[in-house]
Amino acid sequence: MCHGKYHFMGKDELLNNPILGIFFKTIDISVNRDSKISAFKAFKKAGENLKKGMSLIIFPEGKIDDHYPPKLCEFKNGPFRLAIDQNIALVPVSISNIWKLQWDSGAKYGTKPGICDIYVHKPIQTASLTDEDTDGLKEKVFQLIDSKLV
Image 1 (cartoon, rainbow, N blue to C red):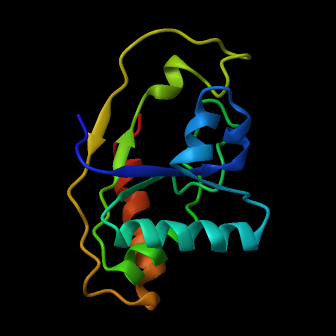
Image 2 (tube, rainbow, N blue to C red):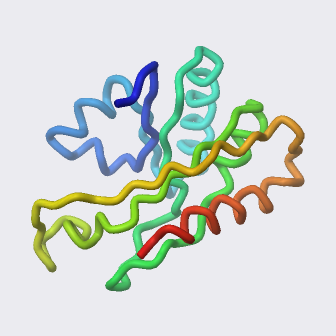
């Protein structure tokens, strides 16, 4: 169970989902991945929420891989730059086998009930990092998450 205040940042296509759209219109942050202005506004809002003590849940991949089975895609810089700028710890999480239960929308390969394996890594502190460390932090988190994927 998660305690405390938290919110998600996700692609603006989630606004069209009948269930998820409700949350993204009210408490979460949507971002148009094709717009630098949208990304700037989203990260500004996320920074404000972090200063209020809210935690941010974000999936740093730039896209979902079309390859089956999927491979972890390259991460965007924004979440790592934000963590460094806000001097907050990152908690990487690996969700290793969710794709076996539901691949994308479930239309092509189907979907089924089951148990997904979630690995919560040790927090990574950013207090001693600068903007020049963004790429190294991004790579470290990528390797951690990827190490638990099956």
